[in-house]
Image 1 (spheres, helix red, strand yellow):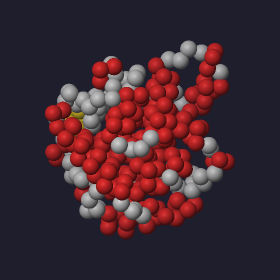
Image 2 (cartoon, helix red, strand yellow):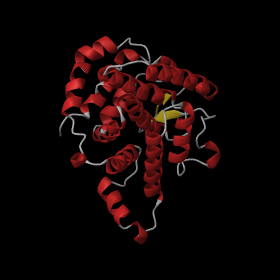
Image 3 (cartoon, rainbow, N blue to C red):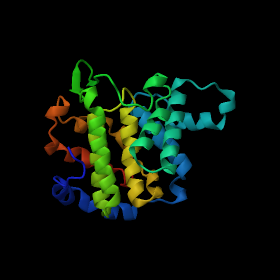
Image 4 (tube, rainbow, N blue to C red):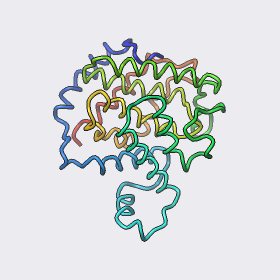
Length: 255
């Protein structure tokens, strides 16, 4: 799937995208709704929670208030590393080299040193409660698929896009990235980060504040279900992608 294609955009625009400009206009980007530092921490906590981390936002923020009294465990360190990856992304351009640096940062507690910030050399799958639910592309093709993906990203970053197109392509990028599954671990965290990274490259740094990770965590079952478009990389049917693409704009709605 080439992310710079607009195959599904007309239907997206008709059913979903027509809401996006108004949702953005009504979204509260002010400091009263949370500063960038706090909301970055929230993003990292919720993204980690999706992957099974049990530290909730309240517990993490209380830990930060008195961290000198506690020795951080692995789950705290996972969140702290993801915060550092978000902060790196906030200060750097979206490209393949910088993505690999982000993965190196966020995967410090997830992988051995030799596998951090590097594409996988193993076959990987996604497993449900009792069986394999998705088999990703073979490791020997990961670099090729990622080069193609970043070629498309580079094109989109140079093109003038409407806010609706930005949200469409960001969601599609998130989905395709997950399907490639380029790393041994940390793919979900990286996919949610890169989705927001793309949006901020196009629309400005204020968009780091949107609560996409929180929305995906709150609707985790729907999130995983809508990402599942086939049993393996070669049988993905993107004709069913709109259910997932509809999730990102929902995070802009008032609670």
